[in-house]
Image 1: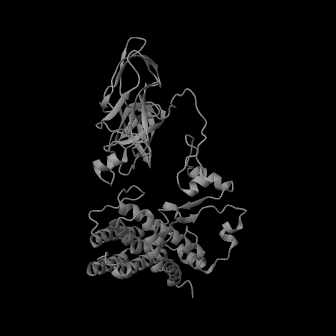
Image 2: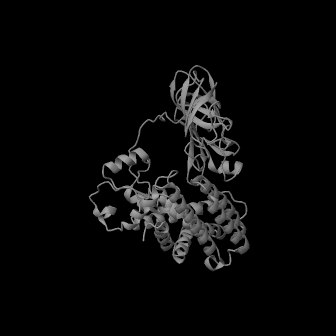
Image 3: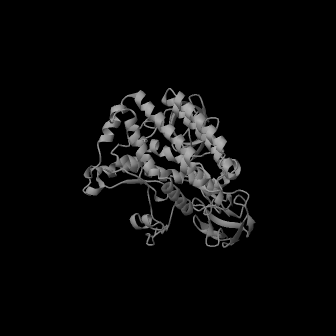
Length: 486
């Protein structure tokens, strides 16, 4: 059955006309068939959580219910697969649509075409019940996958055979107590909100070692145990309780400390150490005036463009970075003209986005990287996208440090304040991200660097370019540029 969207608020979608649907049913939303799950039902109105980006979705879009709850597929190939949170196979999706994963893509969780070597252990005539082993499949050199009777079935094995099968081929036939025959395959579908039955549950006794010291030492997890990642509400309650909470970027890159809640550890509180007040006073004098704040935002963009012109040279990055000086100079000059003409923050954001897109193209040509599409939020699977995310967190760490040293709270952003909490960190990081991180990301990708090698290269170039000093000087100059510091 189908209904219609009447409201969209981020990932929450409200739809009507679904009187026969059930709570926890999986639905497909809109023309792109975005996957969602019904959270609550009131009459024929359903509140749906959509597990994909909902931009462009609006009232009137179709909602089609599958009539089944959110389920996972259990079978050979699952252990060696890489999935997202709703068991979409990421590697298969990349093969189908490329690294820039589109919305609504549908790919089976377990490969339907691959054949597996099934060795029967049960025999014809055996009496079996749910959980009994029918046979085994060597899924990996160390994982022997046991194929079991579905939990809801029991009866007598009428036929079973060893051989090479896909997960949908029949490997055995079971006759239940009513005389009905059931064809058994190597894959089972199971609702995620229903616990799998067990005969006896053994307490976990062996640690699950990740190899990451901070995880294994501070947040140990038992093999076979349960672990949880706290969400925003849980973090807020932990902070109120006085638990030190810190945020970091990828690979342990320091970003900023989040917990200043009357902690007994004095060194953890910025208020316990001397920091200048002249800069925050100067900052606040212009910050409440939108025109002056826009002027400072333009100043930041000009400094960013100047830094790109200085850093994008062979002297900085070596012969592998074949700088097209004429193209670069023209691009920077055009960027400065566009910044000067920007009459609002919306205009400035548009200028920044267009310039960044052109800069990515230039970086690809300079390094012979080939076709490239920037994919944010950690969704890019190619090496350049991963390195850009990694390196940007290094820039965020330096930016947070620069603002903290000068005593300017991260909330007093000049450009990103309405789009991101703590936006000043992003304002300041933008001063060096494109100038320093972007070239190094493409060069590292072409060299085939590991994450550790790229991280070291980034730290080296950030040190050589005196990135932190540049951020500090720019923040000071931004305050003084409006005449608020004599």
